[in-house]
Image (cartoon, rainbow, N blue to C red):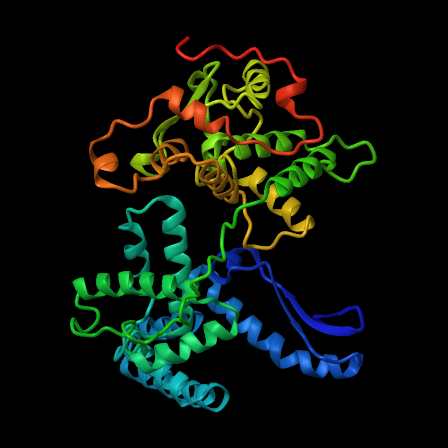
Length: 433
């Protein structure tokens, strides 16, 4: 019956098939029905579930199910063996269009008729060839396909896409919970698709249905993402990871690996994927090299803080796969940090942190501690991997040397109950070895 009782309130609920989840961006539809009465809940859920099923039908394959059916009619009419058969099929089509008008409205009926008779172009007609020519990295390409898939699921024909219709579509996206950033991204990728369509004269070269249709809410000046953890927060997260079991078994081991990753992030300011991608060949007794970074400034050599020198040495010696953090696997985007990143997300949420705090927040923490310790911004930028703030340092300087970066990084400390720096013997190689 697609309803479930949560607490004292009934919810409409529908599991989305795997082949439609990428386009819809979720695994399950769920909506509160605002009633504790089961019979009333069944009545309220029926139209909601029907709408969800229509969305699933359209989302499958990132194409529009209505358009596909209309195109089958078009092909059938073109291949009719004789005029009498064609006339018969046209009469059946006319009846179908009338039925669509009664159940879905005049515009849906017109779109179907225009497609079936060849007056209009299906919104998905160029979709596959557009996908094939995208040269962006895999993760970006998948997002582009997903977002333009939403456009195709909404509009059966290219002729139906205009500024007014897109504005109404944006209202629907907002009603489905899409934020300003998501809508800006969706419109950007739709413009990319539209530009491709113009190249093949599939749409008017002067048309711009995605321009000037969305005005995002004014951005708040206050920073609301990747906020820094306090030193006490860092200890709290490290301790929680050290005590958190991996799995539900009674004697499940603790997530020591995540605790180690937190330590590395807190004492280096490196991105999670940078840490998870470090090979032991890039680690010495006093530093490690970050290569293949997101930006040119991200390629850097980072000194190893004395507090984590024993940890780094142990990880390097015990590695079983050539990586400093061994045992991780790559996802389909060649991202090695995905799984452990999700574990961190669950951990920090359980500890009461919101989406304003992420693993990236450790970069903010290190930057904050360096600033409060009086470290020059250029030196901090060389450690964290940011662009230099001035032309003199940013364009002409070769960067701070290792001794300078090491001295700066050693000013960072955290209130661990038993400081690793004081209670673990350090066997790090001296600088220059």
